[in-house]
Amino acid sequence: VVPETIAIAEELATRHPDAGLWPADAHARATARVLAAEMHAGFGALRSHCPMNLRVSYTDCAPPPEVLADLSRLEAIWSWARATTGSATPWLCGAYSAADAFFA
Image (cartoon, rainbow, N blue to C red):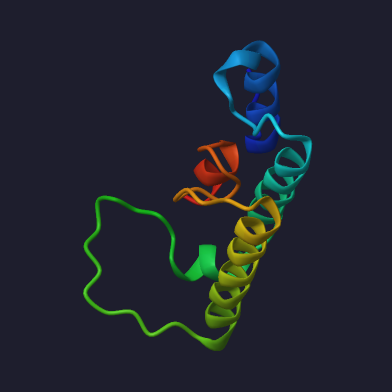
């Protein structure tokens, strides 16, 4: 049992290298890992104020400044990832990868 998200992604990538969990290109792969690590360790205000709960329907949300700062950071790192990897796909680092799953 591997109970931690980064470790789960790495273990799955090790066990199933042909699954494409991380980008094949070394630069894109490093970028994807940076994104996953920042999502894993950061965005505390966003996660606290806007938890993922698919059983609840939210009708209004007035995010505090800390959440708006997290959203701004998301926009910045997503733009950086797409620019630095040259992604022309809907995904952050080219093909769909674990980095995209971390931001679901």
